[in-house]
Structure formats: C-alpha cells, structure tokens
Length: 102
Image (cartoon, rainbow, N blue to C red; front, side, top):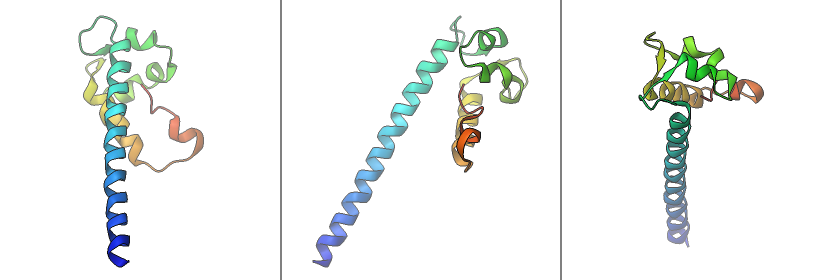
C-alpha cells in the first residue's frame, strides 16, 4: 500500500512537470506570435512607432521602462526578461496584469 501511494505521488509529480513544460511551450509560442504581430517591419525588434500602434497601450506607455538597453527598440530578450520578472513577483488583482503584457 505504501509503495502504491509513493508511486502515485511520483506519477503525479511527473505529470505536473509535463503539464508545466507544455504550458511553458504554449506560452513561448504565444509570446512569439505576439512579438511577430507587433514587429510590423519584421526587423526583429519593436520600435516606438510600432508600440504606439499596438492595440495594447501598456506597451507604448511603458516603452522606456521595458527598453533595458535604451536603444529605442524592444527586442525579444527585453520583453522576455520583463515577463519573467512579472511572473516571479507575487502580486494580486490589477497589479498582476499591469504592464506585464507586451
């Protein structure tokens, strides 16, 4: 009985890890699609004008804060760093979603 319980627990942990990996994969795919839709000229970065034309005004409003290297563009690494930072900060309600999307 104890061995069955341990085996069930281990299987649950493995399944949880597989689900998390699948969710990460979907999140990456969604992020890539979002980035491509914002990068209108397909140069691999988002300019201030591309951000200003985005349907999500958070991107334009927070452009300077997101532009970590202050080059006037947002690249994938800058947006991914912000996403990771947001996901690690325990917040609640509106604060959680504020500025976390591109």
